[in-house]
Image (cartoon, rainbow, N blue to C red):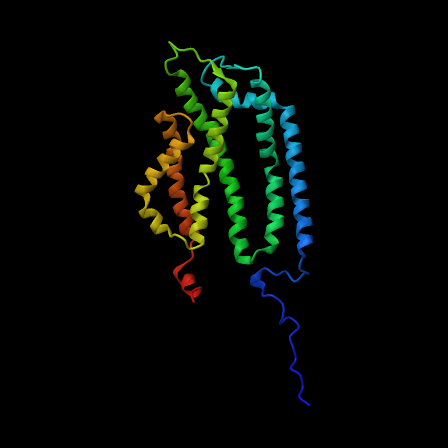
Length: 267
């Protein structure tokens, strides 16, 4: 009688690199239940944020008008339609609620997708999301405290001896939210470059060689981001973006795989 070979108890287990944690695998129904739970928690957080922003909408509107009041004395916004006020209140509530609930939504997203990732994917995704959130907040703060006062000061004081500033509340809020949001998104550039370098899609030396093309692309982005055609506001946006491009090159150089590491991963 031939003895059966001794089998390793872990022989059939998925490798650690596949992201297997050793626990029982979830069925499709269990995944759907967890997804429903994450969506419900995120939706509840957004609802609470919207209610809070509805309650404090006058304070939030005061924050939005503050950059213009710092430049123009007794600055006020005007209502040109009976529905302007309610429209602005709804917009402030929705946008503010999403911003307040974003940490909860981000956590629920990570809690759902991270357990299924490999260790290598986690090392790229988690720092990328956290860093992207920090750069987004930094960009929004820069837009509020630097770009908005400078651009509004130029736009509102231009020809002020002949032209009175009668700004509609809807137009003003749209201007402020667009500047803050898109400048915040544009500040994601260093993280995008760093992640691309970490994945081996580009190297820091290549990015440095593309700096002339980056200048053109940055000014195109600034022209799209700013809702006005004046070169002053576009320059206020393009200047920091160009600096962030070089910051992204430094980050790409710091995280890009070394030549020996790339050679070891080859076939």
